[in-house]
Length: 120
Image 1 (cartoon, rainbow, N blue to C red):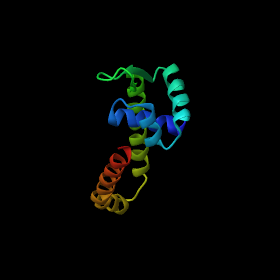
Image 2 (image 1 turned 120 degrees about the vertical axis):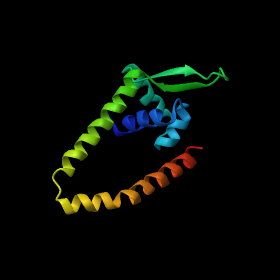
Image 3 (image 1 turned 120 degrees about the horizontal axis):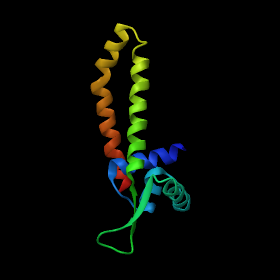
Image 4 (image 1 turned 90 degrees about the horizontal axis):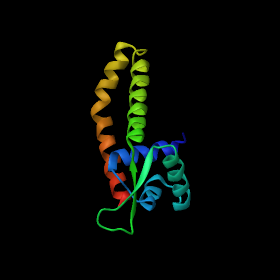
């Protein structure tokens, strides 16, 4: 799976159903490219298209259960990989990472807010 596909699935998991044009903007690709990507993911059973509840002209891309499961599995694999790497560090290095956690969490919050603003 491409990085853009994985990122799109993660975006849908985090933000809920979205229009193809909104997904294209948030993932930094063209609308035609996102349309092709959504079609491939739809054929794979990871997403589905549904009508907007209040505007029948609008189609939303939604995660299927298989898509949500894929996102959870990738996240779990990432956590496991980092846990194995952390096990290779010295005690002092683990302490340094623990001390850096508040700054890293703050960076994640800043990034999340910036992404929300750019998605509007």
